[in-house]
Image (tube, rainbow, N blue to C red):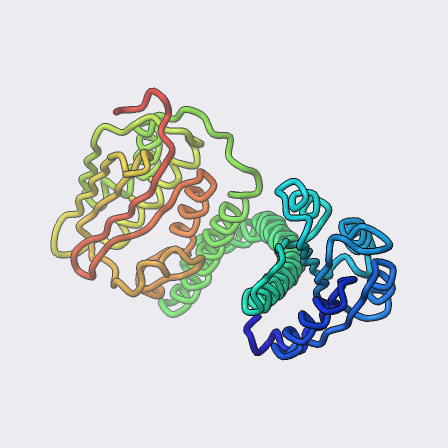
Length: 388
């Protein structure tokens, strides 16, 4: 509270010595305060009940009761407890007396004679402090209300996400069987009727069959994506070399067809879910195969090193076509495909990798420049007996 803003504050000046009381009141009024007077403790208590008082200047020695007792009663009444009490005395000047007043609830203590400028400055300082306390209390109350509202919103959002994931899981699961029947019967019909089809009819069948297969692949990926994260993974000691081996086995046909060279450093033991980490390697290497450069054979290098936080930093590097820097974060969004349908895929693979690594408490990101290959990096917690 500045000097200007403290003007108009309501004070109660309590002192049985009329000349002292009058002089103090004049000083405070000239400083811009509204001042009421009281000569006894009983009169002071009555005025605090009748008038909203911001600050009480309270003499310790009063004719009817001790000023310290008056302070105690003011502070114990809910209607007056917020009032500031400044105890003043010309006789009770020892440290124990000041301590007793402050322990009873007084906000400050002055010994007479008090310089008028010091008195006014002390009153203003106490009023500023009380204003700051009230502002802080209000801010804390508003913050508490906003936190409660945020908790309600987060709870509703979690429930909405859970419902959406459940819908995606159930919907994808239930769509698999009828789509499988459609695909099977289209393939059967194509084989039975192929001799009677001309070229344009065969192309139409190929378009329908390709659409059914892409739909099946999309449903499979959506099912995998919605399934990851439904339950936290059961983390245990995982030898990453074994997870990589499973991924390479699953990709063996594509690796052979594209003549891919996969080179891996010695990989550590980490805490994780072996099956999910195999899927991360499979998706990242599969992504490298999809986006390989036609100008040179694809080479994928897998590295492992400790990061500054002590986690394992795993890198999957390739010499493919690379990614524009502006798209490095977008590639992890579900269904985000930068090359349309020119390159096969559903746009779920990298989003699934991020979801798996997030579930392991790690981070995953990409580093690349268009035409210079791509590097995907992710972190995992080390096991106690990992490579040091």
